[in-house]
Length: 325
Image (cartoon, rainbow, N blue to C red; front, side):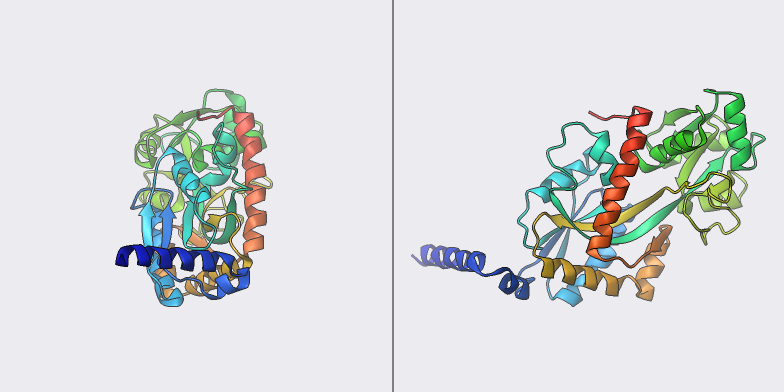
């Protein structure tokens, strides 16, 4: 009888909360622990951002933040989970920039990246470094492009896998510079970088954090960075634009999203709380080790950025012929 009564009371309370106007629900937020899904397994940059920011949000929101790593299918498993979650702000996703690529790369996704999610805030961006094998006589982006034009289809570039942001950055360079080079996919950055070092593959885009010590040690030759301004980890490297590729920009990023339909006051509050966390010295110190740059952006600005990224990478995916079933 007690359990039955408790169930009825809980059901009545749930019905009452559901009937409350949006502003009343928002005022009560959060009223239970927040589940933060992470689209990759533990240990990577997206997971690190989730754990650091999630920890800080506990104090700000007065509720636990439970990290739930759901890697697989390029992040699409986690996206599908989020799309089905209640739109009350208690289920969030820490995602990587691959979600903009996956929108076109994968066929028959069970969700729509623009329709089924609420952009909340972009947390950080990750710069890539263009690196070449020290075994070849190429010391600049212009020299590499000239060599590629002189030997179409001969030069090779490595990546951590088909459809990964560094792979698509390479395809973007091919499009922008009008050159024909062959993509060689690997299962991870480490094996790809090892073959570039030995000259088995000519060059690759790698995150700046992984590339910086190899460049400093002479095991890789740094040519440029993919951001629009120089990057502190490798300050001597020009940007791709400075190196002679007009308009070229390709960065990874990490961002917080929710399911579609989250009340606007909750989105605004989450955005504001994360914005307070990012400038904290202990947060910047930990996340900057991942090669990240930080930016302050509203939910609307992030939504516009996501649309731009989807449009940008859709053209590259289609031109390259890359696809994942």
